[in-house]
Amino acid sequence: MEYTIRQMVPEEYPLLNDFLYEAIFIPDGTAPPPKNIIASPELQIYVDRFGSSKADFALVAEVEKKIVGAVWVRIINDYGHIDDETPSLAISLYKECRGHGIGTDMMKEMLSLLKAHGYKRVSLSVQKANYAAEMYRKIGFDMIRENKEDWIMLWQEGRH
Image (cartoon, rainbow, N blue to C red):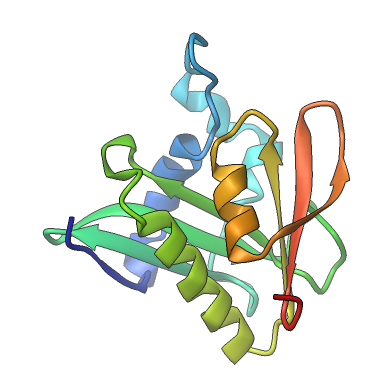
């Protein structure tokens, strides 16, 4: 599958709502939540007024000129929050495009972009049952905290 990764432009920021929904991990055999779940305050912090902070960065993956995935970061008090200097990362890829290395490449591009802007760390939260946790480990994220369902993972420049 051929794809390109590029910076998301402001006119595309509304697409983050779609990718926020796609980022919700749904275990096999579980019914997906209603689309309006993304209107909840604990999820809206990922996308509300995106682009208004200097720490808001987003990349997209395109296949045949169609956006099929997004990775974005911002400093927010979310599930993966570490501190007020460490951006939290969200990533999402349409199901039909998973398993082709696109997510891994988007993550690596985002880490390079963050390094170029002086960020040395990025965090995320991932459900333990989510297969993507292994991808995060391979890229260099370490589990630093856990609760019943989630791992809080951190990537730090120079650690890998």
